[in-house]
Length: 101
Image 1 (cartoon, rainbow, N blue to C red):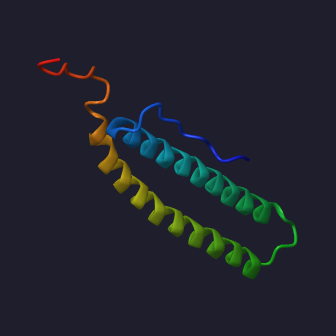
Image 2 (cartoon, helix red, strand yellow):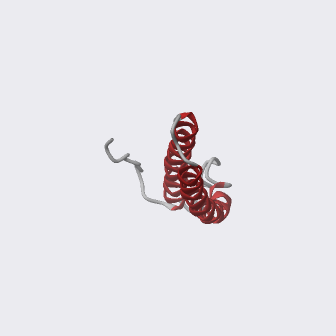
């Protein structure tokens, strides 16, 4: 998977804020893939015929630890989004003409 490219024709507040929001969305997508993998890990463990209770507990603890880390990252990403989104509120409006031009 190659690195995504976020392009701005002109570097300004709106483009920068948009790029930051896109970056947050890409991080969210990555976390969604990790959550899916953790779910598959549990499904595999549960469907294994000869798994012991101790092994199942270890898998559960591993998944629980990962979900806790993802939750912490989600809180940070929400904080970032809450900071960036207000910057975008004026971005869809056409620029005001300058007086005297």
